[in-house]
Image 1 (tube, rainbow, N blue to C red):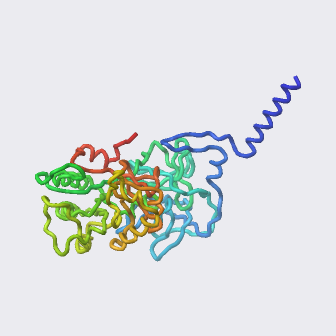
Image 2 (tube, rainbow, N blue to C red):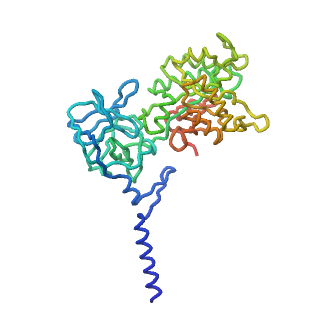
Image 3 (cartoon, helix red, strand yellow):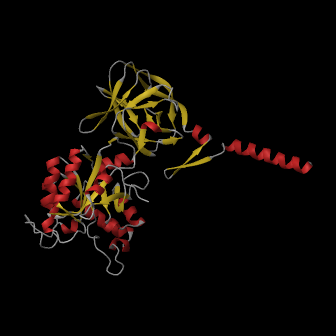
Length: 423
């Protein structure tokens, strides 16, 4: 009896000890992520006094600024939110890590204590399928803080049971999972050579002009917006609300065929695209070039970079590391030290000084390559791994979807619409 009592006392003490250092952790795996519940969840929200808290007396639109103001939601009356600044016309507040704007009007700004989020790193994003309420608590009967617009991707910082959580004016806002869809990520298309079908000699790394026109026509007809590399970076960092119909169009190598055939199509639809340049090849020709589909590959010249800048954003693709090791069959960059890669990238970026992204030659890279890219000031590293651009990978291992004549139009549509999955 004494032994049983002793064991029971030990178990009771052990339970008390566990509870004293934090509640029992329940690990819940959801879409490849692991979440912890218990005291850690309690610490996610705390109370804090803010010097400048805005409370509007009437419902007010919330905007983000780009080329123009875009309405991304409506702030409810009598819902206090912390503001970070103001100008003559607008108050500034944060939605996720992005600055948003509320037009000045009938409102009060005062010092106030608010519930606020401790950890605000972006977890993922959600699609709004219709106007969507954001509640002040994980309860459909609680008050609504704001209403999100239909057709955008909003950054969230947490997932708890039936709710996603975003931050608005430093406050947590709760979105019912049933009202939105999890965002798979942004589609990033990658092209190389574009030629009329009658001029094609291979389907490797090549798409016909006819197929390219069909694809760009689809994007235009379905109101897709083309994004820049910097917009992709801001999306990944939770600093940008992106339309549901958004896509990045990228080209690798700076081939002259894309000036001849892709550029006019892109310009016709008002699309922008990234063009990754191998800068050691831009001096292979001098003056104006006549495109020759039957001859060897032709590349942009420095003059072409100036001429085509209204459509193409020129990005890094190394100076002279775009070759294969004849023995291993791998990119020669894998044989180079971090210092050698960094020197090459700096030479590359001298010709494309506005570069935000790097496309790894042949999709081959190492930790040294990533370290060199960071030191060179590059923010995005594109691979050739198929998938969407999202937070599941590093910003230096961003997936794309290679488009050649081998891919069907149905595959293209499934990818840009976010309907494609990978193991």
